[in-house]
Length: 140
Image (cartoon, rainbow, N blue to C red; front, side):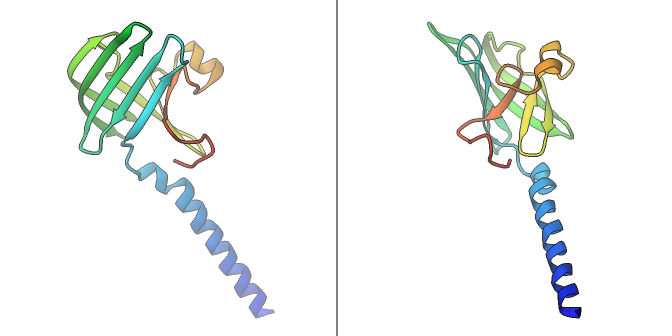
């Protein structure tokens, strides 16, 4: 009987350790990576957060580039702040601050969580930056 209790205790300890690794540790992971916001029609913003604290953003369009930006970024609690060095076109003033929204399986960046569209549909391609080149089911 003591063996079963010991195995059960080990199982629960392993389960809680796994939950901690999957859901708490990702919050402290580096946010650097490639992100995308858009609907592949009119809105197409590609954002690259580099590990050295710089960023570059591009807004391609049918007739060429609609905008570009580069500068520095910094994560502060639940906000991502941008300090542009250069901005052109539609990205002028577009990236100043994003809200970091974490849910169970991913982290996204939202421009305005109080926006009507975001409140109705939640984080989707038109309201949030998602990591590129990752299936939706991969943990952050």
